[in-house]
Each structure stands twice: as C-alpha cells, then as structure tokens.
Length: 162
Image: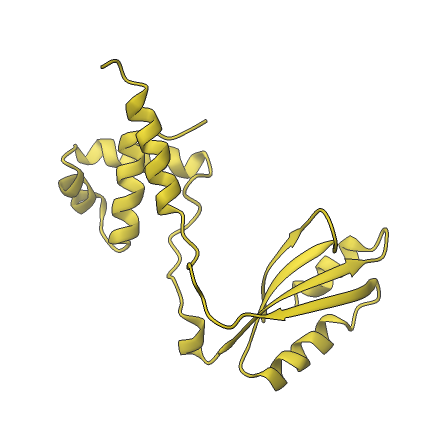
C-alpha cells in the first residue's frame, strides 16, 4: 500500500504547519474539507500517520549528549532486557538488528558523566553480554521523511496516463 500525490501533499502540509486544522489544510491544498478529513482518517487507520506529537529539541531540554549504544544480548533474554530498557527514560529508541550486536539504541544524556550513569543503569539487567557506545558529535542530516513522501507522491503521478 502506497500513497498518492494528494496524500503526499497532505503529509507535507501537516509537516509544514502541524497545528493547522482540517479547514486550513483544505484551503492550502485546494480541496474540500471532507476530502482532507477522509484522507487523514485513512492515513491514520493504515498506520501511515502515527501521531501528532511535538518535535522536541533535546539539547534545549538539557540533553546535550547523544549516543548510539549497541547491545549484545544473551540468547533467550531479549524480552527481559527490553522490559528493563523501557524503564530507562534516556533510552529514546531501540531496534533489533542483524550483524554485530542485537540491539541498537539511541540514548541521550545531560553530560558525559550522566551518560555513564545511564549506561550503568542499562547494564543493571542480566542478559547483556557486551556494549559498544558511540557518542554523536554533530548532526549532519536530521531525521527526515518528507523526501521519501515526495518521492512516493512523484511515483504516483508518473503512473498516471500522460
């Protein structure tokens, strides 16, 4: 299941003005309010649009350090480790991975000293065999999805009869 060019335009408009209401989005897109509401409802039902959370600048909240931590997990202990990691608020993302390491985690901290405390807390659960930590120096490309959305919208338009 993909998105069409109107869905792509709607997602782009939402990203540009996340606090806009359905009427404003309809005006921006030049379509009926009902069309915008219906499209938005379908995008949410399909799990394409998953939320309307605010984007937060973590350094502005005092979390100046970003690190990527790879965890090697003992066979059969993944569920225990995940349950433990959910209780660590500074661990903001975790993915199971292939290749070296079993989990790749994104962790934030207020300082390098605080990062050490967070890592110690992560290691409190049995089942973690080894960790590798990489501290991010600068963000070169922020998390982004709009170029992908635009490409999907363009694919839809190129499939139209010309």
